[in-house]
Image: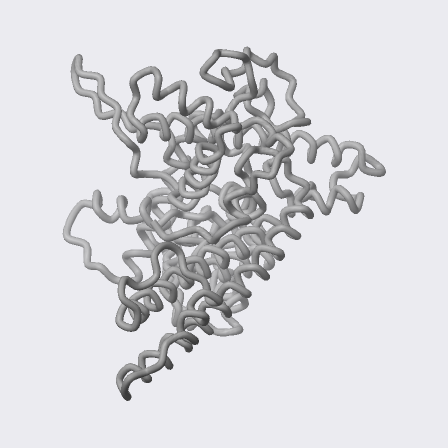
Length: 432
């Protein structure tokens, strides 16, 4: 029996699957309704192709549940990015109609021909971190929306409104000092009171979500929180999106993934690099938060690096981009160190079998639930790893920490013991 690739176009109500062979000929297709029995119907109707591989479009999004169910059934599943499948449709010869079978066929062709398609993985502790980091971001955007509406109502009640950031307690004190002059003003006061209550409720949920994220990060045992400006929320977002650091060959590939590496737009003898708008924007946002935190505190190594770049003639935005790249390299070094420690813990487990020890499982070292993936060999990639990071490479000279040129830690060095607070523990991330 020939080997076939089964492309799946998942939807909320139905899933369409098309099988193709090595010659991109389709021996058949099938469609099932999205229901509790979908995990049995799809493999059952694909029994005619024993040597099969499933290619699910967006296995981290709409197709996540289906991909997870296929993995639990013992099937081999590939995760095809929607952009890759769209490129196959764009470059296809002939007039191809846009429908579910053709979309599923494009997914199968992309999985069959592309060497960059990754195998889908079972959920591990990184999925827990991603859940709480996304929840924290959603609550931050909800708080911004409620606060803006409260500002607008208060501007109609108080001359000049409320300058700066507003809190529920501040709004309630202002409302207590207002005596409505009519029915319209009384209605506005009631609306502002309700919005202040909504703001207080969102703040309480933000605090609770931050606690859950911090608990999950401590269970992961990561060294990311040793970097200045990286709190539990930022660490949860990084680990949740990266998952397996071994899929990045070096720090340059990681920087390209998170959008801190410039994009080359050269032609002929003209060499030009521009700001990258590509990559994982969530990861780019949390790196931006860490950079802003380092710049905010003058005693931080990141602020010294930022001032050094400004003294070289760079603009504020250019210096910020340089700092973000340094933080990206430091994060990559920490993830590599965590992966090496997880691999070492697995090797020391009883019987030499990875994942048999409880501490090893808690650190995500089980082969099916590994948090950071296989250890990446080779030297450390940047001198700005956190304090205590497990690196074997020689460390270059540190960056100057002040304008006087005295040596100090780099932008990604461990945070000094001071009263400075992390950005992720002070306020929720604002939408960009």
